[in-house]
Length: 93
Image 1 (tube, rainbow, N blue to C red):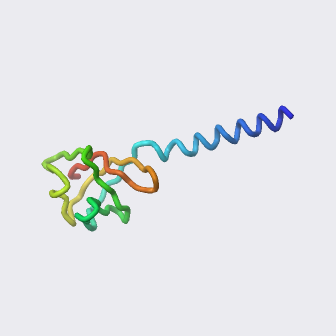
Image 2 (spheres, rainbow, N blue to C red; image 1 turned 90 degrees about the vertical axis):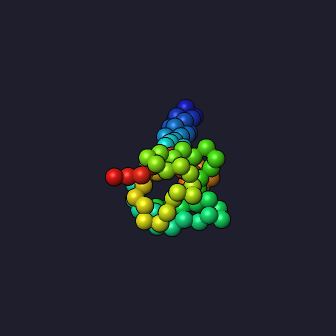
Image 3 (cartoon, rainbow, N blue to C red; image 1 turned 30 degrees about the vertical axis):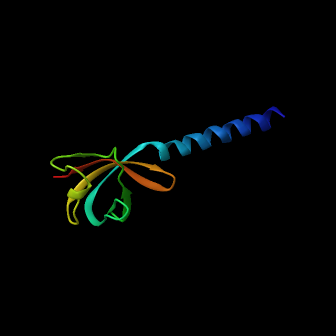
């Protein structure tokens, strides 16, 4: 009986440890492949990133309207609900 409880506890701990990176900040660098004004998103390295009113822009970028195909950027993002949400976008050297 105790062994089953320990196994269940270990399984729960493993699940939490594996799920935690999904909530962590991530970062990607690359060229903007496309920009969709209709849903406020852009694609880098084949991944679609969505911006929000709280997305920060740096290195001369003032807002979403400055994002253009071909720009080399670094995107800090959160992955949540199956989407990638841009927290910060900056120009990459």
